[in-house]
Image (cartoon, rainbow, N blue to C red):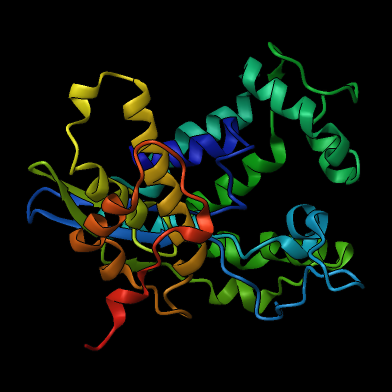
Length: 315
């Protein structure tokens, strides 16, 4: 069901669920009680380098970093969804992809949120003739709420994947089209990048909160570590007694989040290239230090917040 939904969202939610992106997935195996973390996020092309998004002054070019061909990562969605279905699913790829193919081929009604997203994106979409044409009606005008949207090109791609699996996306005609578009727009994804994409199975981040076990996604996702970190800090207070959205409750919540996000900026990265201190960040002793560092009558400037170097001292 999760894989079927993922492919269906590639049709109906292009601003978030799409074949050109990637994702994370937690899978709980009821028979063994084991939970797995599946990392199928986009990967940087082999030609990527640290100055890729810098302008001539050495500053980050936000447009280049967010909306250019150079900013595109090697897609992971197709590899991830087909991987989990083949290894842990109970249905065939053709079965789970059938609803998505029907939605793309027969069309679906544009929702108000989708129409709004497309309207906001129009200036960027118009910069690319293919995008402008794809996200427009048959008369060339932007798609509106209530319109029926059919996607014949996506239908062909989905049918190819349903018959060939991941190779139907990472090799052959689809791969050729991706690489050709990258070359046209100055991107750096190559056939070799597509062929070498692979899913990574990781150990989930785990923690506890007032008797409950918390299981979440590990790095390179930052969500799991800092979810556990924040719950560790909040566990030391009786939040229910403070009242929902009371000043006392919100102050503690905000200050806890500020510290977690400060640590996120300082210590999080891709564990395949950087030693993320996951154990230290999710340690309850560290959470106690953070909690004691929170002043209940005022906000503490970020530069004065406690840093975690103390946890790494050999003494």
